[in-house]
Length: 395
Image 1: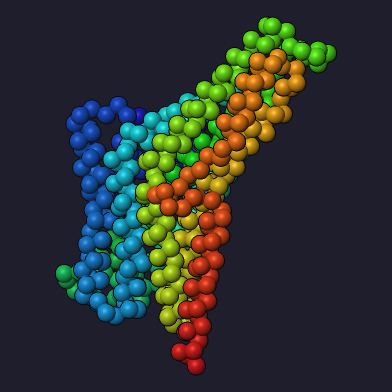
Image 2: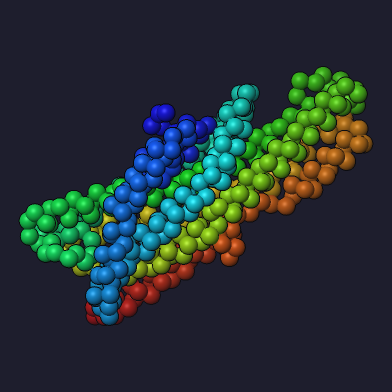
């Protein structure tokens, strides 16, 4: 049992490894005692990263109730932690179903043989790795910015503690806990968000492989000097088309499972992200320019939350595009050499695949670039109105 979770794509492997290290993705093959110890380790990790911090932030929020600047300073990270806790609970409750999705896609992508198919898998993996690196970089810059922006005997983030945090060694211990929990939780959040996006990317990859199979239904058959296929060639093409239909149905089922497992948590995350973006924009408009590190970290946090929404919407949009292009891929094969019966079967496949596959967030909004642009437009309008009010207040 290695530390790195093996998978056909590195992006999924990284995400699952991050979950496994902190105790939220139990390795397969554990004994009953090992599984019990692993659960307790997961409980400890949750309390260290989120549980304790959520409690002290809620208490702090009640103690400063009515002071809008202080409330927004506490609430923006509290909402992030609560959304992350929801996603952790969802993954642990639906771990078996998610594991089946992972195993199913891994089996399909690991069995590719031709050079073209391997290039398709590599292309999808590279794209997801780039998104992971950008997301990780923004998270790292934000976390380090918060950790280094605290003034002497002040904590990086607001929270209530039942002791005086301005005295040693309480201050040093609390500071280490805040920074450590913040960085670990932030990187874990990257792993959970990119897991959903990476599994969606794997569904996209399976659809692209399906399109390639439809384009090459006659591959290996001597059809260049013939107007029609022979009976043996017809049987070969019919068998390949039947395999494509099965692959399409299995991919649709995997996408349906993704929708059922992550639809509600995705809706909660997008809602919280929008709230946090607005709150962070308000904090930036109210912040004083004397602490540039703090301002920069808040700015990267704003970009981080926006990029988080973009990842979900981008992968959902690309999944719809790939599913819609399968009919065109089927048309690119040598269908005019098929028999009437085989043409009808291919036409049925084309009609069925014309209905685009869509993922939604809680059934309220479709994950697409159009949705992301609509959200971005509203955020820009909000930021502009806040900036105008701040300028009027300053003058």
